[in-house]
Amino acid sequence: MDEGRSHEMMVPLGETALRSGLVTSRIGHSLYLFHEVDSTNEEAANLAARGAPEGTVVIAEAQRRGRGRMGRRWASPKGLGIYLSVILRPPISPNRTPVLSLLGALGVAEAIERTAGLEAALKWPNDLIVGGRKVGGLLGELCAEASRLQHVILGIGINVNQDEADFEAELRQTATSLKIESGRLVDRAAVIRSVCESLDHWYDRFLSSGVAAILDGVRRRCLTLGREVVARSGDQELRGLAVDLDDEGALMIRDGRGSLHRLYAGDVTLTG
Ligand code: BTN
Image (cartoon, rainbow, N blue to C red):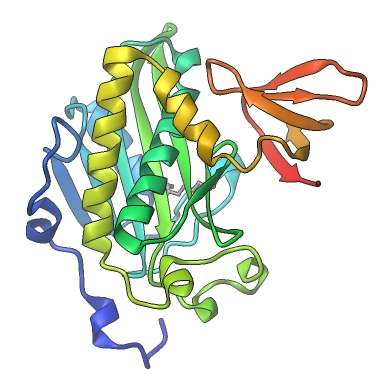
């Protein structure tokens, strides 16, 4: 951490500020706030295994081993970002759960717009993009026994008050923060409350009416659609035009021969 930082930036998160005015039907009713953990996804999974209720939120000021998608690391410097995981227990089969990460990304994009006044887009599957750079991401992890879903952990990382110098050199061209994009410090507690409210809204809607409205919301913000892409999943590579999302949230890609492929997981690079 840079010694010259203003004290304002170091305002720690407090439970009172996080709970004040939070109006949700389930997300955040139970809330754990830690100074430092290995990973909030891991803490949330442990709590879920011990019976923590749906909607439980786990937040940390820093993570020692923040986890990103595809086995990557998620840099989690103290007091600068949001590191948050939510426990969900939807009555669905494990193979329908990827849409929950899209739901989460949609909720976070809305929260960024409401609290930081920035336009937020999505890059399939779970990247949050502001000003053409990555400002956050989601990591959904599930626990199932004998193909019965026990719980899903929705892990959310948002770069909030980082300056360029706070990012590791190899991330500086591709990563950004709400502070860099808005030119001002952003209140992390306000963003967290807004994330909880958006997630609550979309999750209620998912339980009552299914995936259609969520997928429409994602389509409107998804900058992957209509673009030429290279998709990588395991050792497979696929080039083509990203044409749509199917009703499970898979990315539909039309290759050069006109065949349609569905990508359920993986990494996508926009090429045109
Ligand atoms: C990505 O690779 O884009 C997903 C990043 C997800 C990071 C968040 S931070 C809170 C939660 N705990 C983790 O260890 N990872 C997720």
